[in-house]
Image 1 (cartoon, rainbow, N blue to C red):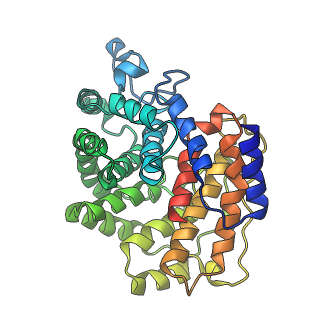
Image 2 (cartoon, rainbow, N blue to C red):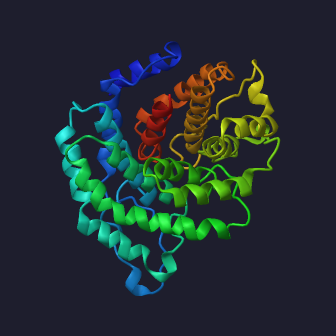
Length: 349
């Protein structure tokens, strides 16, 4: 562990262009693997209508009861599938697959759906958890691993339920939520859009496009200086940029971005990463996630528009590498979710 931490720290300092290695992948996999079937500590997100609703996390959510809360469990599962897709010779491959099969069984998903169909749980994990669930569905359907097709089939009814909820909810949202935490409207649409495109779900694409433009299309001069708030783990400005980059054509997006974030066009643009004062504090450690959020959005922008924004590549690298050691610091407050954020930053890189 100490040797790996030293390697990662040195890489952060000296190897800006580093790529994810098998050794790092093995360690990153160990974080969600450690907690995906660890019931406690647990932060339930349900509403208790009466005493009969007081049941254990595993009984309520047999698929996603580990890793502290429901959404962290979901993106922990995504992390493992993502790593298997990119590193098929991982050390604990058989163990990972066995646990994925146990958690994502047809029966467990049916229990998750039964919970979500309770009258008072229509807004459960809206839209942060919905977004990550569709990313997990996407990753399973992308996979060429033999086990993945059955798990994608098992998970699909839950994904369809959330798609229906997106379609019902988005037209009702009169005002977007512009924050850097779970209720971010912009982030809550990004992976859903990616899956809608991948699965050729034109109805979901249309809803996300129309509502994103309605909610964000007239925004200008996003205040970069207001970031970060004290416990942000997402960049409010860049997550909004991220969804608009997806739904607008280049001819529409670049003029919109010029009004929304004109500073990004400046060749000398710089931005200080979010600094964590105490990584044992479950909220203060969020700022490491913010740095990964900035990185993945900047990488995506550079990738699509390399001639316009080549100067932002180094800034994305700096944010990624600034917080990378936090993923292996051994504190539960960060390790149950930060691996997923780091991996998504690598995915966009």
